Image (cartoon, rainbow, N blue to C red; front, top):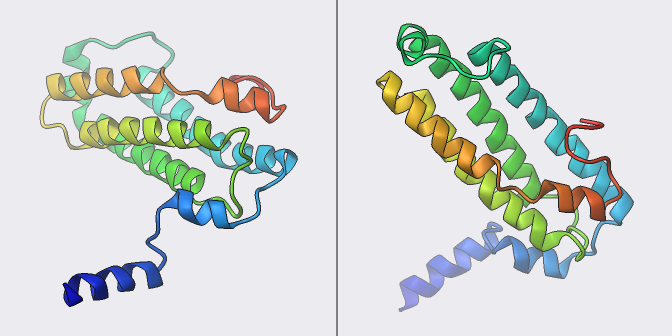
Length: 166
């Protein structure tokens, strides 16, 4: 029991408390500041998504499995770069300079959780050993990508809708 308490005390002392507990103790960002921070976080991630799309699809809606098979090493590298960008985005959403305003805090947590699922699928794409595996992981990533609450966050923070202004 003493060892468990010592371990828990060590975790708390290095800042491993849940984000919500830390955020509750902090002063919230203003909605204006939160909007600026949100765009600073999501705009680079959006740009990385567009880069990924250009590399993989080259302006097309889809690519055939045989092309994925032939280009698999290149596509895996593109997925790895995209995964790294998504991870940075999630890390920054979960660790803002001050707590998110209560009007969007829950939505931001939900967005980060969904983006982490996208990250996991994209990371799996970067490690896929076959075209079929790559395609299946991409479909999984796409499913989570489309479920994010970014429009609600943007509306609450008086930001342009997704696709406009970054």
